[in-house]
Length: 262
Figure (cartoon, rainbow, N blue to C red):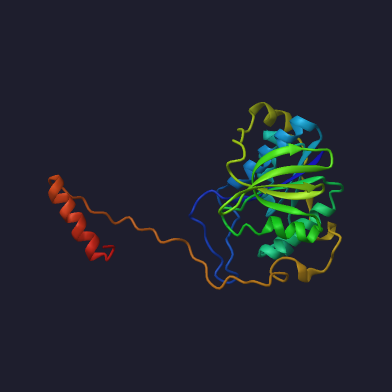
């Protein structure tokens, strides 16, 4: 089975600057990590490979430093990795991001199953996976919490819906977005780090993609624009109270009333 996992490098800190002109995060030079939800998708792919054989590839989009998350995927067991990186991709909203990655997927040849994390911690839209599937014209299922059965031509999964748990079967090729409860991700292996330290991370730029229409990528291809974005306010104010239990509870009640919580 040819499995492809979509992964993303996200800020590893809340102290991230925002470009005042474009309204997007300044990712260069920021401490980063693999999107936590993508770890569950990668673990799912590795367990599937162990059961039925095949290869696990990963794809990501971002600045050159995003190659680090692909190297981390190698340390967990991924076989190959591709990074989509070009200034023309910068500032993309979910639609332009989905289109760009779908173009990268098309350039990678045959894929039976695409796995994505439920969402990313920097965007939280949970839209990129399903939109990719639409661009690729393949069926997709979101909110997958369990793999029920791997068949020769299809996969049976359990979905965590708002009020019910549903079971569905979908034919390959298809795309799944997985929940964080599906499997416990493994840790990167130091042994695999040594084994894969020279493994190539293939870089694809705009010129490597089939569709050369610049109006479909980056800011040009983004129908939605961020009106305002700002880092969360840091509030370190605190009060220290001393007294008996009755005195402290009375103070707390009075404070909550003043703050109009009661």
